Length: 506
Picture 1 (cartoon, helix red, strand yellow):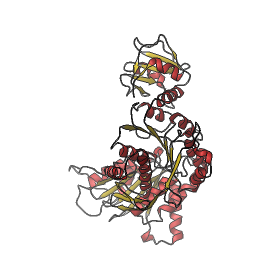
Picture 2: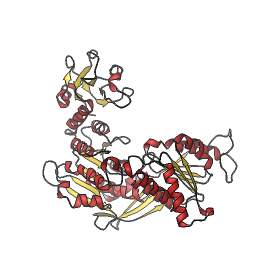
Picture 3: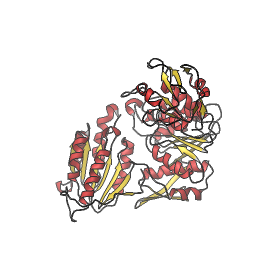
Picture 4: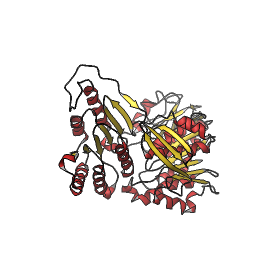
């Protein structure tokens, strides 16, 4: 963050100082008293588990000041030399500060939304641009009403680009965040049946995602995946969808695999742990990634990099060294076991992409699928989990493990599909359901064999990263045992081999 003076911040966020305004220099913001740094302005955010107001005194030992809510703050003046600002709503105040700061950013602000692929596309764009430009991108999945402001405020005024990820779970969230970000480039990676508990259906999702486009700055660029009809209709049939907030229309650049796409992915193939793809039959990209969905993410990143003036050759060269974010089709090999960790989140669209990855995977052993509940599907939850069970056993599979409240739904649908397809008992995968992650952590390793290929995916609420870690620990022990088919190995004192992370994209 380029430093601000507290005098600037007071009117920007509509605050009332407690006592005299101190000549404080603010070099950053924080919402976590445990990680607050010198020069930070601490925002006391009330949450479902903790209220930041309880930690203001602790934060002020390091922070240069704090922003508090007048109805929650029970303390007095700040210590000498510290600033204390009173507001009605600290979350809203954080947003107002970010909006004020965004107007000072001189570089290109790139906003990314979509049901799937936001974080991966963000990481691709940031990696490609970093080869020739100075800029920043949101950390992890900072994509909500707190994460988006923190992303903007972490940028430097002189940065040439800032990449912001924007998410939603309810109608109107993207509209509000879009008004805060006012991007020069907006990317929509696509739509799927995600958050439909609040957004009703895929058409509601498309409307929500497309609301970002009306906040594009004049002369900006919209980059939109139009493979799904719902989003294609929403963007192409509604001229108002891409009207800039201040009048005048930005450019629209579409991408995907359909004939109408401006940037069309005309071919792709998996070559081991690398993706090789072509755009419009002539532009070749080669990157450490896995799956068709990530090939499309690369097309979006290509479009943004070209917008910022990079040549096709520069972009292709940067993609060669791309490194994926964690828990998004992150591949780890331990001994002969191949583990694909896609446990960050799940919805029907991303689950289908994960199944494609496992279906296309080449492995001498069994394909093993470990799935957790897909959250926020509302009254369609049972339908989509039954769909998952049927889809899973439609491929060659040795073991299907379902975890969570909908585990029995997944397994029952899979069992019924196997009966309907007339698969012999000998050719059927083993089907197992666990109601809790704790049960799965204790038992899943015992179901595996040394040369299995295991894909693990579910929503954050199921915390399948714990299963991933249990499987890795089992594989490290198994790798020290004598070769041959095995289940759970005997305890050993031999040193386990180091884990090898394969460069494969989420």
